[in-house]
Image: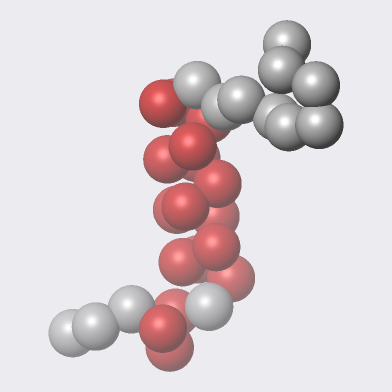
Length: 30
C-alpha cells in the first residue's frame, strides 16, 4: 500500500472506467 494514495490493478482501473462510461453514455464518442 502506498500512503496517501490508492493503487488500482489494471483490472480494477478498467472496471471503473467502464462503470463511468455506463453512468455517462453521453461522454462516449460515436
